Image 1 (cartoon, rainbow over the protein chains, first blue to last red):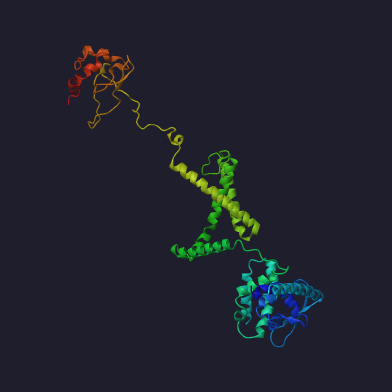
Image 2 (image 1 turned 90 degrees about the vertical axis):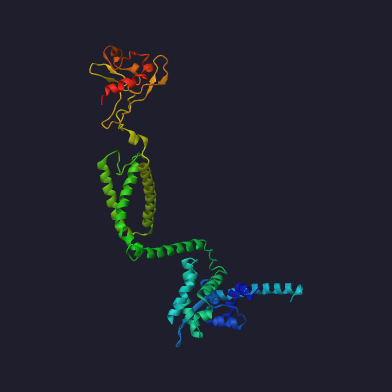
Length: 109
Length: 324
């Protein structure tokens, strides 16, 4: 088992969580995730997830012009996105607790 | 600088070839802008920072397929076939370039393109032949597309088909996919028809049918049905034991020395050295007239004794008759 496999299952949730407090553009969000400890996240994963979440109606987006460098496409949570974050978050907590309990009972943790 | 992004995006696009076009375009829609952001954030080439376009595409594909949204792309079942086809095409192209100079062209296909109108004419002919074949219920065709054994119809049909084929050839370049496909599959059928026709014709030419050639065939030797020869002198008398020679003194072999015994019906070998071999079968019955006048043959031999005295006669009679 490695974290990239685990990451795949929670990438949506991770990106939604990274956008909870502040809107961000693609590379910015990647940096946030890595700073939070998800060092294995790849740029393509974040980009793909953002595209998918946006297409699923969980994100709004807007372009911010920049004086130096290219324009940046910002993403932010909309109402559906926040609801999804809450729902998925609960699922994650339940799942994580179950796994923690399982590991504790077996004395592996 | 923008070239780097374009090249990278193209690389990703190629690696996503297995996806449907809509899905792929959706995935790639924002990629150039995104890559521009990435590059603005740091130093180094895109490949250094993001990995190869292939790896990027693979990661993109796997994340995109996770939750609803984009279904996992079906495995490219035809990838191997496609690869084989590409390799074959590559080989062909190389052969094309190699053989071209041999026949004095840059590429062999340059020459084939020149032959195209010739193919149109041939195609018209083949279509006419195929039509005639179908319409005449598979009776044997010659070289003209006859329908009901009519040359005029054949010529009109031939001319019409050739003209249509040429017109089609000139226009087919502008055809859309479906008509083009129709023309191509028609061509395959025609080629098969032509090959089978060619092989049949070749076969017929090599091994002529029995009836074809022997019909009306005349035996070059008019004497092949001669079994025996009877020589009569000026008085109508049968000359026994005659020898026939040609102008060079070579003996002429006519007939066979087999006789049918009139009493038993058996076939027996005649002992006569000259003709007739079977004096008893003489057509004009002159043999009995011989004895009286003929000095050389005092052989009174009528019918039955002929074989017996034939053995003694040659020595006497033959030198006499050919006083050379």
